[in-house]
Length: 78
Image 1 (tube, rainbow, N blue to C red):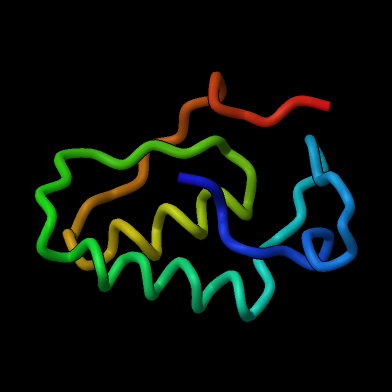
Image 2 (image 1 turned 135 degrees about the vertical axis):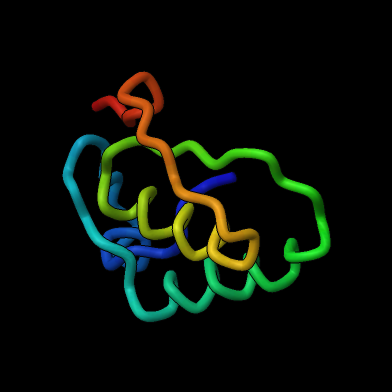
């Protein structure tokens, strides 16, 4: 899945390796997805170390009680 909305998304700008956090709307998107997936079995959650991806993954994994593991190989590139 892709991370939730950021300020740069609204400006049609590419974030790349910029560690842009989620916007309020992005947090709502991720929490909503977490609620919708709460009945789907998920065994693990991985995200790049970027703030926007970690926060998205944490909000999606929370209903499952899963920790989010960071994986540098998933980091976005410029």
